[in-house]
Length: 487
Ligand code: GLN
Image (cartoon, rainbow, N blue to C red):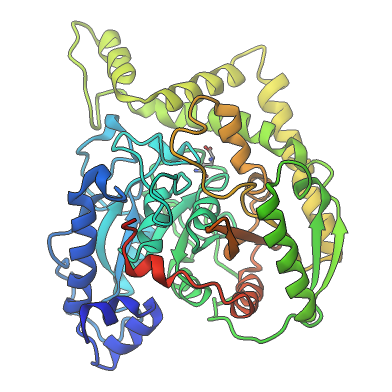
């Protein structure tokens, strides 16, 4: 097969071809590695999707097993996953050059399943952001239009998959960081049920919300990667055994499926092109046999305010460990306290500092109940809203993001405007429920995403519905993938 044909294979096809001996894992790895390395070498003249690219396929710890289900399929991994001996910097200067002595559980599981580490992907610093403009390693560009952002915080992973620099990738989602970049880059992204994937070895942002998930070019590949990610882990006490084995989706219709459209998340603030694509998808779902009804998540409009207290509060605590003693950057100073403060002042970027200050304030005595305590109550109300809705509906659907990819720099001066990108994704994060984004059309030549959310541990049903819609929608991102995002 030529390099081009190799890159056209989906991850599932590649795994099948390798298993049958029709494709060489080394050639596949080299085809992707060459593209990823060329992009990395181009710096900000490329997409800047990678912060590190492998020199060669890593030697497997055990003899390569032809039995391993994903044997020989390259994988791009968001920078914040610890990868043994490989830079893991969470997009931050404070961790520049940090090479951990161990790998995250999910990275190990995927290596055991046969994937090969292709590279680490750029991201917003400590996963705080919606545009990838908060990375210490430079902005990432959207392969559909390089003057625009790929979304964030997992923007490097999304851009890499959309541009065909990787067959698939790992991301994390705390308030939307898988779903929103997937939407803006025209690919599929799944935020799993909280706890279904181990967080061990993920550099923490907000521990009660952080969850790892897959990015892929289609729903089948998404399911295939997710299959190997799930599972309880004794190193993460919040992890759980998924009650169902994850299946590859099949199906041709949505007969009997009841879909709720929450008025609170689909009204003002959704750009008209996104709304048009959303309405067209609802009509399509109906043609496929689903029933569609308006519903209510009465507390959802407060989700963003609650999230921007809870996530910074947890971040302020998690990020206390970066003090120049154990990891990464260390400033010179005469005494210990000045070393701590200077290290943090030099090492953290402006958005991270903003969140640490917000979070510290929200947790400070005298304000704790009024801010953090209250936000937790709102969180409970939001979970109850979803539980009530799922008594009537199988799924809740919304646009993934209120806009298509916006221009670099367009929202950097207004953090509140940037936070609105998460309007439709944050409620599911607070409720801990799974949600998937699939591309559902173009608006002004840029991809739009449809979000489908279901009850905890409903991933199999969610993937099936997403698959049926995907087949009917026929979205085609192959042209962007072929040219590697060169525009
Ligand atoms: N954009 C949101 C934030 O900045 C979500 C980030 C995420 O999911 N990691 O917090």
